[in-house]
Amino acid sequence: MGANPYWYFVPYEADFDAALQKLRAREFQSGRYHPVTPFQKFPIDLSAPTSGAQHGAIEEVMDAANEDGTRSILDIAQLASEPFDGRQMPYFTAFPLAGSDIEELFGTSHPTRKLVETNTRMWDRIERGSAIYVVIFDDGKPHEIFFAGYSFD
Image (cartoon, rainbow, N blue to C red; front, side, top):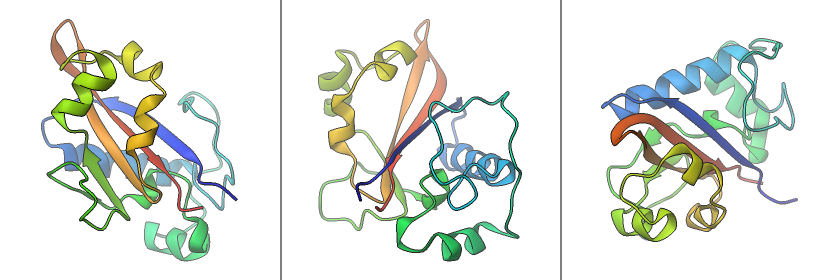
């Protein structure tokens, strides 16, 4: 089996870890994770009905998901402050895209949502069991944070 991609746009806030933890809590409460929803469709439709959390805590979900992971942002427990360089342990971590990668991938240091949504090359920058994050701009101002990752298997 191959790794499954997942991605989310959340409102911008300067505390990236707080944004990540709010996103994880939202997805946990909704039940949009494996094994409750084995293969979630992306992008997420926040207006679609959900089954709700079927576990008592994210840690219980991780145990139930086994080596497949949750196929969602629940697999990501922490943020790295530096881009992935191959030396760090990638698992359970979201890494910022390097400024040079942002420029190369999107042709600007201030990518818009449309630029990110239509870019397929960025997926090559993500390791299994990890994620990336990048600030999305609107009218030159930070507007959203984009989180994207691959499941373990």
